[in-house]
Amino acid sequence: MAFTVKATIASFGGKLLKLSHPSSSTGTDMALNVFLPPQALDGKHTKVPVLIYLSGLTCSPDNCSEKGFFQHAAAQRGLAVVYPDTSPARGLNLPGDHDSWDFGEAASFYIDATREPFSSAYRMETYLAKELPDVLFSDAEVVGQYLDGSRVSITGHSMGGHGALTLYLKNPGKYASVSAFAPIANPTQCPWGEKAFAGYLGADNRAEWAKHDATELIKGWKGKDVKMLVDVGTGDNFYKQKQLLPENLEKAAKEAGVKGFQLRYQDGYDHSYYFMASFADDHVNHAAKHLKLPTSKAMF
Ligand SMILES: N[C@@H](CCC(=O)N[C@@H](CSC=O)C(=O)NCC(=O)O)C(=O)O
Image 1 (cartoon, rainbow, N blue to C red):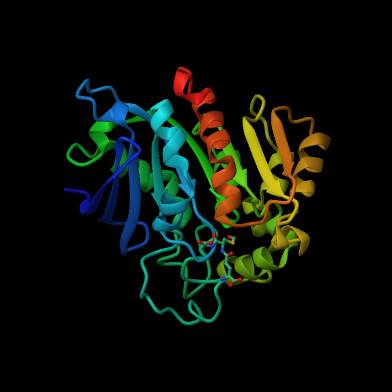
Image 2 (cartoon, protein in one colour):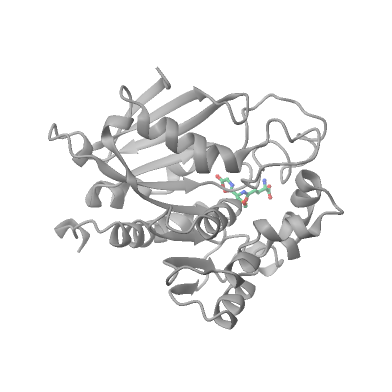
């Protein structure tokens, strides 16, 4: 069996499964949570589409499962939500991976590191884009039987917003849509991103950094319109400290003539899960629309 089930929790008429599995990408066990909506469990054997949610710095799969409120709209629309972890398994104790909360453990930035000592385990891009979908959608026993691997969208918060935007832009057609809450939208130009990319990719390797920056990637977007929704709170201290820079992403999209990008500033909201929970329905409904799910009377 690919997955070990650690817990099964009733939520909004569906079930939240806390899982772990051995990963060949990271060489560690990986934790993840999967929310199965009631439509997946009604005995009709209808596979449901999937929204992948990438968490921010310091998070595990539990933060958003417990207080992001995604399950509310996901249960209405019939959408599974997959909450992966933010870095390879805890307790590797690589040199430097516990020195600060914005680098190393729970702070992978969802890229494949090329520098020692991180390059063997910190392979989160390969894990998320290749291994996890393969394992999830081929698993016959625990979750795969409920999930439609041909209909997937992606979202995320802060560092996870960066992860969602870049995975979407790097893999045209793989995800039906993307959304982000307070994303680190131009990591090569902010302190969080500079620190992470220097550590994982090398301080002398700025050309490589640009390949993992949504603002740089959108300049080369060759697909049809992006299906991209971004929310940022005007009371977000990290926004005020210029860690997020959504205005740079907006400017780059505009200058490149990319259509379909929507940036909303939410008055007075901060960086926390109070902000996320307030707009989680909008982000689930954005994904559901592009996954072509029928509208639900319960939405209105
Ligand atoms: N520990 C830090 C605050 C860290 C923080 O705010 N993390 C955010 C994500 S930030 C960008 O990726 C988060 O989601 N935290 C988890 C939570 O449950 O709120 C500090 O003390 O300042």
